[in-house]
Image 1 (cartoon, rainbow, N blue to C red):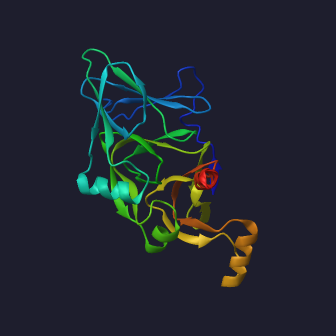
Image 2: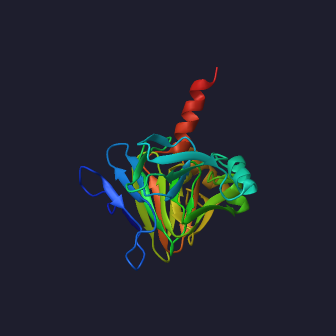
Image 3: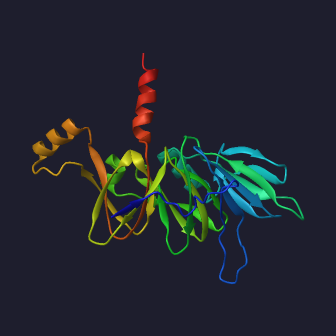
Length: 262
């Protein structure tokens, strides 16, 4: 297993980190994504005339008037309905389109939770995205619904029986609670990740629900998990990348709910 802070997109500069998908002929086919770095970065996207992106509802911070923003149902009504009913994602997405001839329009986006933003190049590798972690993508990428396993759907806390997966080629922006780290799963390894820290993972990886304890016997595992506080985790195998956040969003959500109880 190799774990690191993914520095590929964290170059030191005043303007942040620029990530642009280029085809083999050298022609840019998608808008320009730029991370405005800091403790809680923003995502800046520049769009030429008629270039467009799709982002999570209510993600816009500001724009310079060179783009249009409207709500759309992307992927069909049924797909959007399933996504909104089975996860924390919105029924509508925002479609942002460049409308200025001769120069690019700009929009600034931010996730709901405080933390990092990561840009993923999608094409040869596709990714499964945990609920509440999708931020934006260009029009070359489609977010589809994929059936989860029964055990993962019931106990995995990754979006229920239907989870989100990327299709197509382009750029996807995901967000996490806290800092984002990259974990590389090597063949022959089994990596256990606490569900509340998961952001996204390579779609080719196999995952299943497991207990964090290595003790034998159901009572031994129950006792160990109760004492350690680590209950169900997801166990990954295969070869690919997992993005994890340094803070546990599920634990934070539970804490907020406890404050609202009488």
